Length: 366
Image (cartoon, rainbow, N blue to C red; front, top):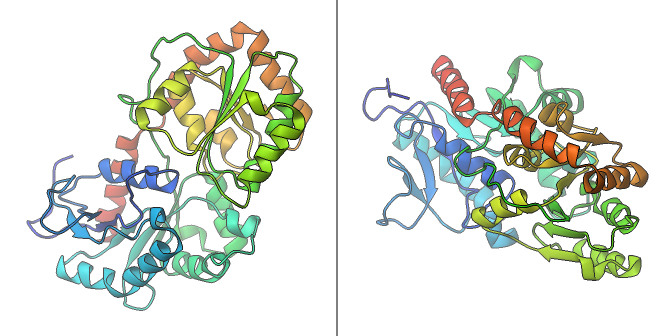
């Protein structure tokens, strides 16, 4: 995408403060969205030490201790940095807009921002955590003050309007994407392992996944759960696996590299993503890109993502989840269909097109 801006006049700065060494969820989206934008038009605020080589050209160094990898202290540092330092960077770079891949932006310094809303899960399923006030007060304020709110699905746009009354004229649904070069079919033999990618929060519905898996008659199938461990939820889920007699067939990985993720997606029997609600459901898209069968909930944005390619189930029905898993074990035709139709469906989600859509929007607003 050629740059049409005068030298030193970016369209916006990209807020990379959430980026860390082991990105998951929002961090993955932030990394990939930044890569889809022309770095001359939208320079990245890149966590790196001053004087070190940038990962992306034109990037501007920012502190390296602001990401979720640094826990609650990192979160607090990021919020303070966002309010105090970020407006100064915009002025220094003469950038008229801030593009933030999550709903975080300065509130009191006259900053014009575009922010990406992923979901309102903390409001839909509130948890008594130190971050509750952040979700109840700060995030809604950011969404209302933004000049545009990018929504990662039509479902998220409806919820942002319905729950927070953000005007529909501000809401711009976009499609997330994937990188065809790094997520693709490898032609590897598939085993009998079911794969879960994501956190262990209650809305991920993993208790029902474990119960459904335990009801399968095949003693050789396994369940691999990949996602950050959470002391509030992970021990309880592991105890349930023990109680159900399936602990020896469950594997728990807190994180895997991109290459390991690619191989897991290509070797598993199916991806299981039966959350009670998802604002998008990126693992479903990644699985389809690899030609992998997807068992998805018929809730939130997941039907938008998988279309007719995935096996849609009622996420509150253990029986339906188990039946879908059993069908993937028994019916080779389901795997063949996923191998043929999944990559075609995934190809309709393009980071390049999303980057072009956002660039046009930034140009209109500048």
